Image (cartoon, rainbow, N blue to C red):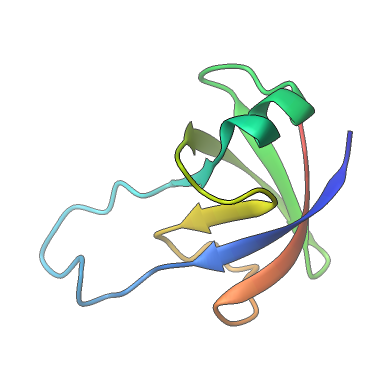
Length: 87
């Protein structure tokens, strides 16, 4: 299954100053996990702007069709980027 989503970047370099960067994941809600049939400990494929990548995910209380990230991945176009996600 492939669906249109939005990747929202909540990265702020001042929040993470002098701290280890362990934010190499995206946050999604349980509805997206079920719809894509994602497996615990697995990856989610994210495509945007002609690029694609696979990232670990974490279930969180976020809105439907939204992926949150605290780290820049290189596919962002500003704070909110339209993306396609799949398993």
